[in-house]
Length: 354
Image (cartoon, rainbow, N blue to C red; front, side, top):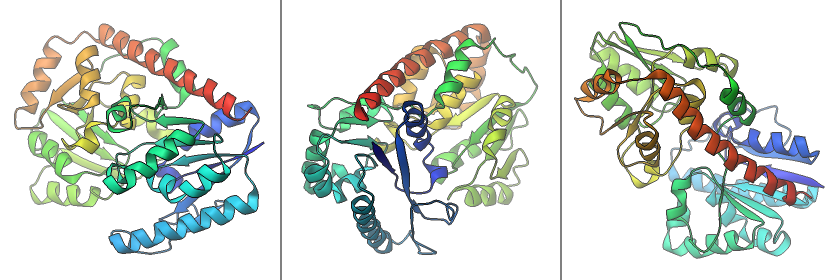
């Protein structure tokens, strides 16, 4: 039995590949990871498609490379004779629909993490057929269910390290750092300039807050330029960080910023930062109307906001009745739900490679 895990980009922007790796390793299933090396960071990967220095911001160039990658995948799949396939992203599922439904019916998993091209009227039917003929369908957020065909079932693959999440449920409660300055952390891939700049505008220049952006991404430089141009000394940028340092970085903050654009695409997703917040017991700042906001309201996990000028007052109101021990218990309560859902996924994948 040999499987292929096929992802849409570099491994550092697709951390969920580690979920499949861990499960397949545990099950003793041989597998390859096939990826699209977009930035050169996976030059040593055994099986990769490289787009070199192509300008992927150009939609025509990007579409051409999607087609090239699909051809590369078809050739690689045929040459290596995989028994099972895990295919990430609707783009690839649609481009590979022929080989999936003809040669791998019932022997592939579709992994869905972003609302995308499958919402197009002309492509939705193709994607629905791919969902129908797979072994199972995996989504990274329960918020996606309302955007996908209702006649199929979906397992949730949460974007956390399962072992770390389980350990967090057993660990003793950390201490709440009650400092005079509230550290608000944005960590990971720094994107969505328009939403993040609203947080900078709301809290930048306020001596009661320190905003830390740790990571790289297409919005990082623009946000840093904005902060510098406006003399916002309480906004810091650290750039790339090592994964091994993540726990230390998160542990030093007071709030985690997960304020996303208020649109259909972003309102349905679960951010990696949300899981970091649950594991490290940190309150969050999330967007009103999102699936994350629903969890925050139900469990009392932070501030739900529209990102306006009153954000500081909203944070202060939240902290005025903050019971950290109760907060930690609520984090664990929700984390336990997610762990249980992950265990259901693991059982399904065990059947998949049996």
